[in-house]
Image 1: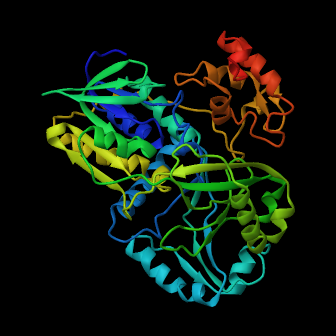
Image 2: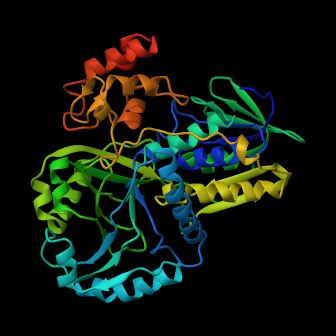
Image 3: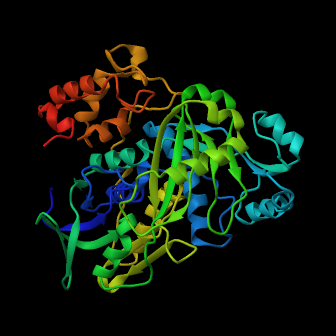
Length: 461
């Protein structure tokens, strides 16, 4: 840390918190980002459907609608400049019965109300011409050409790297357990006794955002975790799908979708189960069986393909149908709460929102353009040029990751500290064998690059 008292401390190192830290680091401020886990982007942000949404199906006039539309434009422009992989595949909203088909015109009008004008209602034959492998029963569809695929792992890492390059201090393993507000500053204390002092605080704590909100003395929302389970199919299945297949949404969820990924796989999910445990990210037999049942109807050939991985993420659902964003000048505090599955898309717009709120509380001056340091990550998408094409020693053959990539990730400004961090920075261990073949070699090379015992990389005491 370079400041004893920071102008702003951002709590939460997910994609939203990292976006806020990046935006603040481009101002003439001292900034710190604190994260409870040992790495940024290691919670909800790593387990989502990885779609850059147009916002066509948001509630018109809602805060979410405005921020998703703005975030879509911001992130679509930013991603190519820093090495975040993005693919423009488009999406088709598929109606599987007459009632859903009858709703397509209203959904198209809803998109127009949200400012998205490129939807096109299709009959069943047009849908099948676009996606010939779909199962029987298609009654129609709606084309949404602007939906993109995005790398969800690199996005928070890029934001955090950008923030660090521009002076932001990153503190991981910092789980806030107490808040002590003074006349001009607020002191945040972590479970391990570390403290930071801030003139202003931004709450981007995700699943624990309501708990931090109450520590500041406020109420207004409660997180009700919504678990979403997903299945990732092998890259050989990619030929079955040209674009994202979206269901007709309900009031509770956007439903189960089929989506290609920038890594070359196909993803099926998510489920939507409201639970109480904020750490219950394990997959369930019922959830996986339910997804396979729906997948067999939607894309029958897919369920005969090999499964690479299953995983689950928790969304920060609340009792409200919209984001919960508030600012409290007397407490020098901004809350970005209840940011659900669209948070990846809206992250940069939420960052703008936070800075706008802070501007009303105290004077903020942006850094001159020539003082903002640019950063660049190595893109992870299959459509991008991967490092192994230029040489190096491959250690993970499923994903063609080199030893040199591991070394770079371990020695990066925002470094990987464990195997999960390496996976999200390089794709190592994320392929067909899930590390069965290469994990020992990966741990050995990580130990050599980091100077830490191999046992720590293996997760041993």
